Structure formats: C-alpha cells, structure tokens
Image (cartoon, rainbow, N blue to C red):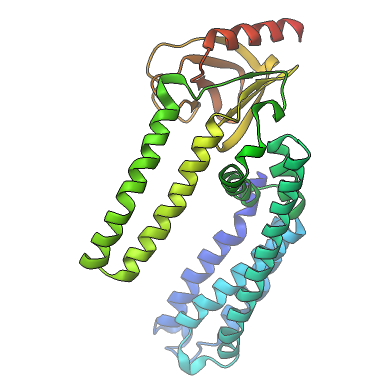
Amino acid sequence: MNTALKQKIPLFFLICISAFWTFYYQSNSLLNAFGTANYEWLFLIDGLLVLPLLCFLCIKEKKQAAIKAVVMCCFAVLIGSYIIPESNKHIWSYLEAGRYVVLVLLLLFEITAIATVFLAIKAALDKGSDPDKAISQPIKRWVGEGLFAHVLMFEARIWTFALFSKKITSQKFGGNTHFSYHHKDGAMSHSLGLIVLILVELPLAHLLVHFIWSPMAANVLTLMTLFGLLFFIAEYRAMSIRPISLCQNNLIIRCGLYAQLVIPLSQISDIEINQRYIARAQHIKRYNYAGIPNVAITLVQPMGLLQKVYLGVDNPRALIDAVKDGQSLV
C-alpha cells in the first residue's frame, strides 16, 4: 500500500468510529437496547486502544506516530464528551479533564522542538550551508519524512526568509549554474505592490470589522492577515534568492518558498520555448509568477502524475541551452 495512503488510515478510522458511535449513543433502538446499553467502554476501546495501535502500525517513524496517537486520542476524548450521554460517563469525566493537561504538555513539547529546529537552521545558515538542506535536515531528524514534515519545512522556509534572508545568497544553494525568475514580467514589483496593498488595507479592515461585527472578529481577522503578510514578505525575499539550478545530472527547480522539484536530466525528453497560455491540469506543474511561462519541459516518463513542467525564467534561452549541454554530457 502507498505510504502516504497508509498514514491516513488512523484518521479515516477515527472518522468512521466517530460516525458509528455517534449513531449508537444518540439513537434509541435495538442496537443499544433502547438506550440502556450506552456503555462508555465501547467507544473507549476503539478511541483509546485501537486508534493509537493503528498509528504505530501505519506510521514507521515512531516519534511521529506517538505525536499523532496523542493528538488523535485527545480528539477521541473530545468527541466522546459530546456523543456519550452524561448519565453513562464514569471514566470519561476524568478523561475530559486530563486531555487539557496532555494538550498543554504536547504544545510545550512542540514549541521546544520547533525552537531547537530553528536554532539548528540558523547555525547551519551561519556556516554557509545550502539553505534548503539547512531547513530540511533538522526537521527530518525530528519528525522523519511525510506530509507533516513537508508542512513544517514550508513553514520553516517562511520564517527563515522572513527573518534570516540577509544571511542567504543564491550562490549558497546547490548547483553549478543558477537561473533567476524574479524579473520576468515584473514579478517582484507585483509582489511588492501586493504587500503595500495589504499594509494599507489592514488598519481599515480592522476598524470596519471592529465596529460592524465585533472586536474579537476584528482581532482574529487581523492576526490571520498578519500571518498572510508574513508569507508574502518571505515570498518576496525568497523569489530573488532561491534560484533554479543545474547540477551535473539534475535540474533543481525552486520557486519562491515552495518545495523544490528535482528532475534528472535523463528524464527530460524535450525542453523548448513556450509562448502560449497553459491551463492548470493534474499532469502539469507551473512555476511562474507573472505572464505566460516561457519554458516547457516534457518528461520521458511521468514522475507520479507529472508529465510536463512549465517555467517562467528571466533568460529562457540560457536555461534551455545549459540543460541541453548538460544532457550531452550525461
């Protein structure tokens, strides 16, 4: 079974048992002896015994499995507090109180771990390491590989380029030849304009929501907007720093903050100038900030679902020539 799909089994199991036991406890039928057999231990076995076992069976990285098991068990306790009738709660009353302690401890652990990871990233950047490796290696050591790790790496890139962009240059990234994309069709100017627009709109939107809706809603909206602003600032800085790079055997495609795509040169069947609009499709990836992507790459064999890659770069002809020269040496 696919590893990513296997890791989703505990979540699917939690959804299924939540739906079934909700019907069981809330119905008045033969299934629960017309409300006289609403025993809490029935949901307790599924939610606090089978569910964590599934986490450890389906997730190879034991630390990640343990974290997911604790979080899902807390969700199971929360769900049980709503679906199990009050008159049938005996053990569950203690579990409801205990889940808050567990969540606080888990939050403290996560904050400590994240702080440690960022210190490791900063130390690696100070040494002049490849910024992508400086970010990915501490996170992979901490949580292994998987969706959770990719989310953390994306968030780490946001904070890294927002806070430490002055320590990073294009030359520090892996690759023999680097290609930029931030000047194409005024991509960087558009990004800066969006940042300015958000800054102008932020106080006006806060006051409007504050008086029309509520102060709480205004604060929540402002916090969300500030986090979005942080992303756009980091993206603005990253697009001029993270290059598309050509190694001896690979083309490394980086675009702003997003995860890099590595294409072996032997996997490229054709690379050419593109002059037409490219619509979104499942088998296509577009790395382009503004205008029409100007480089089209066709793969020899699909990489997963991916068959074609389109890039928007400052000097498309130089990239195409460099890739073709690299292919002749492979």
